[in-house]
Image (cartoon, rainbow, N blue to C red; front, side, top):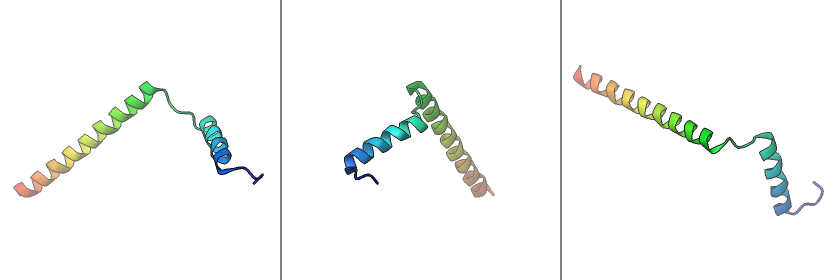
Length: 57
């Protein structure tokens, strides 16, 4: 290392990471959030349905 202060190092790292992995636009973030939540709800429902079936047997 060139003798950067921790603050300078973090600034450089954040700058580099934002260039290599740019943040998606807000509407894309919202869409991904909704997709994730819908997927999770479906999984929870399937789990619940499985438990109901097992109890019914």
